Length: 97
Length: 488
Image 1 (cartoon, rainbow over the protein chains, first blue to last red):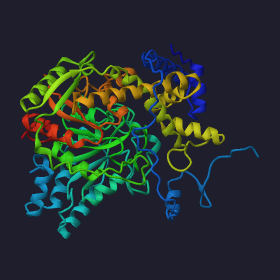
Image 2 (tube, each protein chain N blue to C red):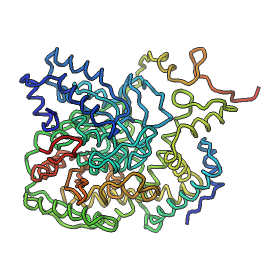
Image 3 (cartoon, rainbow over the protein chains, first blue to last red):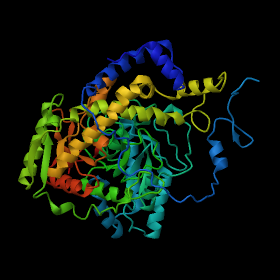
Image 4 (cartoon, rainbow over the protein chains, first blue to last red):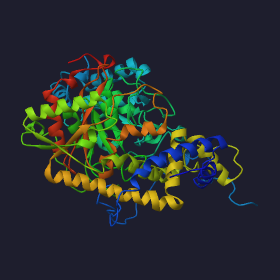
C-alpha cells in the first residue's frame, strides 16, 4: 500500500522545483497516499506480455522537412519576459561570484 | 430577437438574404454577455471591439460563404490567441497578454469568418471537474447558479447554455468537454485523438488532450468540427486522414446500427435518475430502428485509476516549462536561480495544480515508476482492447456521460471524490476514441443530464448521425435555462 510521508513530498517538491510549506507537505502527503492507494486496484491485474500504451494513437512523430524559416518575433517575445538585458532573458545568479 | 433559436445553417441563410447583418449578430452576443455574465461568470476576456470590427468587415465585403461566417463563438482560455491574453485560468499566466501566435484552431475559426467573442473560464490548466480551481472566478451553471457548470471546460459549456455564443471550443483530457456539456444541457464532442490539431493548446496530458466543439445543437456541432479538423504539420500526432463532411449524412438515421451498452457504465455510483435517462434513450434508439445489447468490458472499472496515474504524470511534465524566465509569473527577491524557480512556481500554481504536479512527479520517480506508472500504461492497453473487441461487433457504445447531475459549489471538496466525476469519460481518452455528450433529460430538480455516445476511431460521422437522430426524436434540446433565453 502506498505511503507518502511529509518528507517524501518535500523531497519531490524540491525536485519538481516548487516551494511548499511543512503544513502543505503534510496535507499533500495524506492526499497522495489516499489517491495512490485508490489506484492500486490495478496492481492485481495480470499484464504479463501486455505492451504498454504510451501514445494517444498510432500516429507519432510525423516529420516535416527540415527547412530553416525566419522568426521575426524576438523583440515581442522578450516583452513577455519578467526580466531582460541586452536582448536576452535575465535570471538571478546561477553560480556564486 | 436572439440567435439561440436558430441553427448556424439558418443564420447563414438569413445573412445571405440580408434578413440579418453580421453586426447585428455580434451585437446580440455582446448584449447577452453583458446581460448575464455578472451571474454566469463564463468569460475571462471579452473581445467586443475586434468582434464588432470583424462583423462590420464581413457585412462590408458581403462575404457570407465561409463555413462559420458571422457566427459568435468563445475559446477556452488554454488555447492561444495572438494579441489576446491566454491565462489557462492560472496566476502563473495572469500577465501573459500576448502569446504571439494563434493556435491552429484559432486560425481556422478566423479563416472561417467566425466571430471570436472572447476567452472563457476553466479549471486552472484544465485540471479539475468543476471550474472551481480557476484563479480568476467560479463560473456558475446557467440552469441553477448555486451549481457548478462542470469542468474543466466550464466556461465553454456555460457560455453556450447561457446563450452568449453559438459555439465554444473546449478541451478534453478525461471528460473536460463532455462532462460540462452534460451538466449544462448542451452538446459536447471529444474528437478522435489526432483529428484536431493541438498546436497552440496549453498542454495538460499530451497523449490524451483533444480540442472539440460545444454547441446547443448536434448539427451546429458537426459544422464546427468540420472547420476544426484536419492535418497540421505543426502537431506531430496529427492524422492525415481526409475529413468527411459531417453535416452531409446527419439525417441518415440509425436503422440497423448495433449499439453496445457496457454494464460497467451503469454500475455502482451511477444515480437512478441517470440510469433511467439512459434506459429511455435506449428505448428511443429501438424505436428508431437500432438494436442494443448489454456487454461486459471488464477493464473499464480500472480506467479512473489508470487515468489518475498517467494524466498527472504527463501533467507534471507539461508544467515543467513554467519557470519564470521567458514568460509567466516570477517571484521577487529570490536568493538565487533555483530559489527563483521554486518561489515563482509556488506563487503561480494553485493548490490543485500543485497536488497533481506532486502526484505526477511521485508516480514518475523511484519504485512507483515501475510498479504504478508502467503498470498503468499496460492496463491502458487492456482498456483499449476492450473497446476494440466491442467495436468488432457493434457500431456504437452508449452510456451516461456522468454518474450524477451537477453538484453545488464546494460540495466535492475531497480531491478523490472530485476525480470520480470522470469515471465514465476517461476510458475514451485512454483509448483515443471519439465520444459525444447529448442532452438526455432533466433531474427532478431541473438539472440537465447527458447521454454519452462513443464511436470507432475517426467515425465521428456515425456519432453525429446517432446523436442527431436521438436529438430530433426528443425535446430535451428545446429547453433553455431561464438565463439563456426562452424555450423553443
